[in-house]
Structures are given as C-alpha cells and as structure tokens.
Amino acid sequence: MFKSLPLTIRKIEATEARLNRIYDAAKLGLKGDSLALAAGMLPTEYRQLCELDQLAQLAEQKGRADGETEMSKVLHDAARAGDAKAALEILKHQHDWVAKQQVQVEVNQQISVLDALRQAEQRVIDIKAVDAITDIQPRGRNRANGALMVAQSQG
Image 1 (cartoon, rainbow, N blue to C red):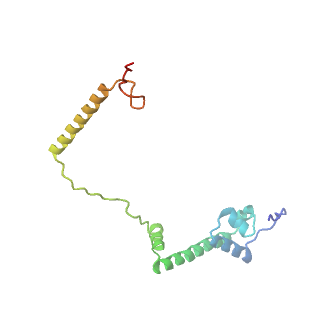
Image 2 (image 1 turned 135 degrees about the vertical axis):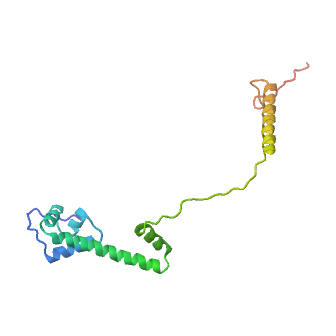
Image 3 (image 1 turned 45 degrees about the vertical axis):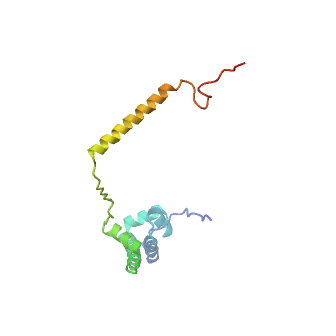
C-alpha cells in the first residue's frame, strides 16, 4: 500500500519523539534514507536535521551502539551455552581469528632405480608391440568394415 507523500514544507526540529524514532530505527540497523523514512522524515529533512542539530546524530550513534551491544550479548550468551558456531563467529569477527587452511601430507615411499628402469623398458616394449600390430593390419579395414580376408567362391 502506498501512502501519500507530504508536499508542504515542514519545520524540522529535534523533538524528543523524533529523536526516539531515529534511535529506534538506528538500533534496528537501518541507515541513510531507510533510517530517515522509518523515523517519519524525508531523507532531505533528516540530513538537514543532522546538520542543524547534533542531537540527531547522537541519537543515531546511540541507537547503533545499543543495537550492536544487544546482538553481541545474544551471540556471547549462545557461545557460553555451547553453541560452537556462535563461538567461531565471535572469534572470526571480533578477534580476527582464521582457521588453518593448510593441509599437510606426508608420503614415505622409497623409489628403486632398478624398478623404474624395468617399468620404462616395459612401456617401450608395449609401444613397439602396438606399432607392429598397426603396421600389419591393412589400411582402411577394421572389424566394423568386415573381415581382413574374403574367400573367393569356388564355383
């Protein structure tokens, strides 16, 4: 549902009710234009109020600090209660802790030069055998095309 926007120029003052609305919106994490609209002001009015009255900025800062404090307490309480994920998030974001990303692999294997030579020699023999077979078979014929030799009829 769209509500009509006021087109009349309003006098902007830092009343207690307006400061409370700014505080509440900032405590919820709203910023900029969203904070202004949630506090019942146009974004230009909010910026003007912050320039003219430092209490508006103070209300926003206090709201942000109280919201962060409240969520921090929730997270710390969860970590104390045994929530490992909450504890990891606290370590990562507040204490710049990073889990080890390094994986160490140890392979204890002995290499025999004689075995390596035997394996290389076997590969050479296998390659020569494959080359010899391809040289014997006639070009253009394979099992899919028919038999290698076709018997002539005796009639």
